[in-house]
Length: 269
Image (cartoon, rainbow, N blue to C red; front, top):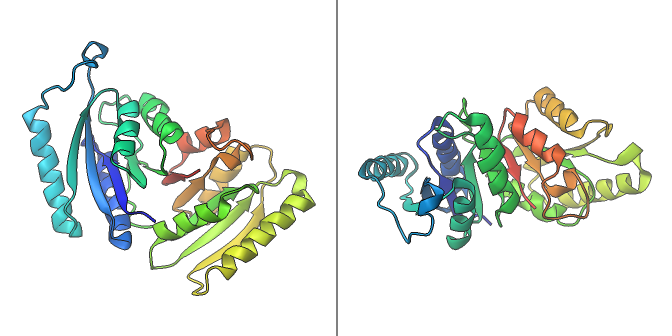
């Protein structure tokens, strides 16, 4: 499922951590890895066909690619683009036919709150493929405890297949954190049927599933608290966390979780 991974790099700690996670996923999935460096420019220069990439940026990118090749055994390609970070990443990922974007949560500029509020949010909202956001401060070589907040929605099984691909062959515990309103019996039955279908589709039993119900008072806080209590190392979000029937929507609950999560967050439609 994940054949082509694009990793935006700005040489910050967060982007290098994202690259390490991308290496783990690529090794599991035998994926191609493309490093994307965006040279941000003033608006006055955006109409130019191309700008000269500073030689030191190329040298650093080459060194990072060589180190990645030596460690992971994967020879990544390097792509340089010019423009505003968010739109340029989205367009480049589309042009490069990315199956997954692995993005560091914060940039090297030091404007960290602005970065997570603009670049990461923009990429999550407009990218046409799943986005895996990696926070700074820790390395995440794999995912063994996955929290999947979910309401009943179309596409849930497809999202599970993507989670399974990320988990690799070491096995993982996947917890479905049901966001049913007032324990609605119809919605609860639908979630239980989905749980049974996922188990039936996993004959090797390398991923276990449990089902819990949110109280639905403050979804973002409940999800973050649940992730802390279960020691989850990946939170999977979809538009269904906020609404059931809007596929291209990043609502306030997802935004808050992305802003405050201390572990990687995968956003997949």
